[in-house]
Length: 263
Image (tube, rainbow, N blue to C red; front, side):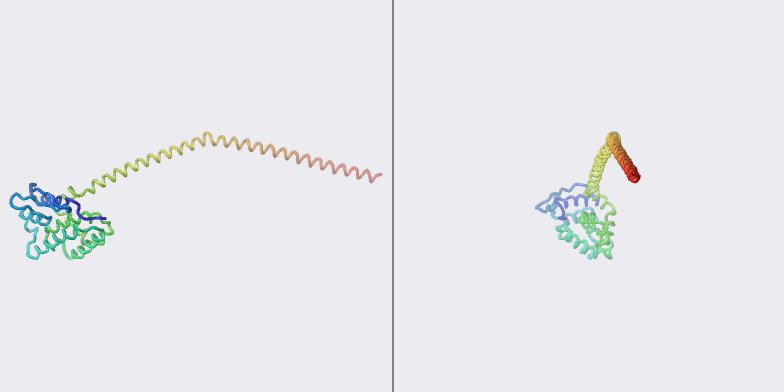
């Protein structure tokens, strides 16, 4: 399953970053090449190319240089993770590569609140944007495997003007979930209609059996029993006559025997 950043997503992220930085919309973006690398057309000077280059420019434009790091060490760490975002996160192409990134980040964040340590920076924002679709799709069991990443992600997600704007503009899951709920509701209604029809047919079959089939069966059984009873009575009468004849024959033999003895 491919999980790389889709075409034009970098441009959308920059628009989100503008909003989170409080910049008025005025920059013009385009993209170039097959990878849709974002390009910023500046009013003065040459255009800027690349997600991280333009993002750093926007931070300076908003006069929020602290997002690039307050010390030399922080600045180096921010730069390191911005490069990691572009070279590793954006170039992943399989679930296994996503798993490796999450595992490495989980170990790194074990003793850190933010990517640089204790200060929120541009690295957190762009890493959040880049990993959002991956982390949002993790199961509960998978999130438990990456507790540090989940903690960091949830923290950034509730950061003012970051997670809310992203969810509103780029996260299409609520729309998809709404479509899924509508489909399920429609399916259940149709299934309910089918079940009602099945029950209606079953009820009609029961009524038909009560009104027609059972009376016919009862009549057939009654006639059959009457016929069997008649035959049993005829057989019984025949047996009685045979027994009577047998007794009469025996009595006759006794009389004849007595007559012979007298003579």
